[in-house]
Length: 178
Image (cartoon, one colour):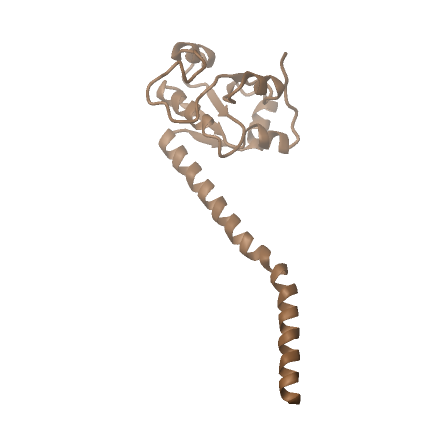
């Protein structure tokens, strides 16, 4: 009988310990799922870059280019004029691109703006550095914009993948317009 009580006490203590230990190690399972999410996002980005034929630029690199006065056009592809007016990377100009890939130019998808207007915004120098961004890494408007820049014959195209969220996360100065 003493043996049975001792086994029951041990089982009870084990159950109590597992009740405290299991939640303490729950983060491990979450860590693995988060890593899978990161991997999926990274591979998606790589595939977009390969398909688009452009390069990428990180937040600190873009900041250095701006500080150095690099001759470039920075294109903000955020979906609403209000979001651009509220905050954008210094020196950026806005041009709306849709989320889905646009195989043929469709003014219904670009807020009525034509391909000629986009080319005028970028300028005639096809070797000029063009940087395209949106809000955050998963936003594909920057991919669509960079892809169109490539289709139009420009050579030095970069997608700023982190977008305005990463810019603000780095606590860099933003611009606002009226």
